[in-house]
Length: 303
Image (cartoon, rainbow, N blue to C red; front, side, top):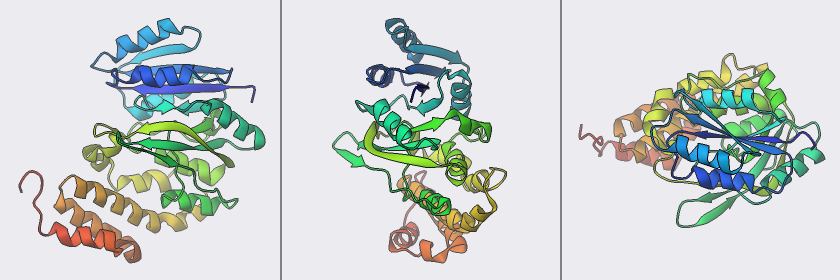
């Protein structure tokens, strides 16, 4: 793959771990790549750390400073700034595995029509590391989309490469401040050929401060994510048959977050939404149990 990779690292208040992410990128053994750090109006020392790293590796690292605009705007800025045909969005609190770019390049070379390369990743919770391999991708795009919507196909930013041609038909919605990648991935899976590599691409560090666990940010999006995926997102008409299935999946995902955040009122609300969309999913014991227990709990505020 002679056209190389642009590794885009969004950074907001991640000065304490940014060097780890950048070092893992510049240490890659694939020859054609650049690293673009986008400092999204950080209030810590992210700007200073980023500039220091760019001075250390001027041939590889470039820094863009901007006023805070959110992760969607950062990703769109990265697309505009990228000089290579393949983009990888590496979160600033994660890191590449050795040989990550070479593994994705080999997978793309083996499937020249593919416009998305999905790799495995290593989940690190600070106690142990678990290898998460991507699910087998079906040749049937409908089955692939359903697997993604049902969380049977795992796609993680930093562990996938996206061809810039994709962004002629999709973009990240700046109105979404959480889960902004899901509508984009859904659009890509429904419309473009993809390929996978079993090689672990990224170490994803799970920690309490990660946006992955941000209940308030998730609630700001809430059930509106369904519309972001299925309305005006360039999906083929056949994709609409998965809408009620996804509505239940989304409600149950929010139910789990609400349960962890000690919000039993929201557990009951999202259970009702899931039940109305697909009672078979809602009545699974793991969700039904949370619903029943919610009647005996108080909100974290005490109400």
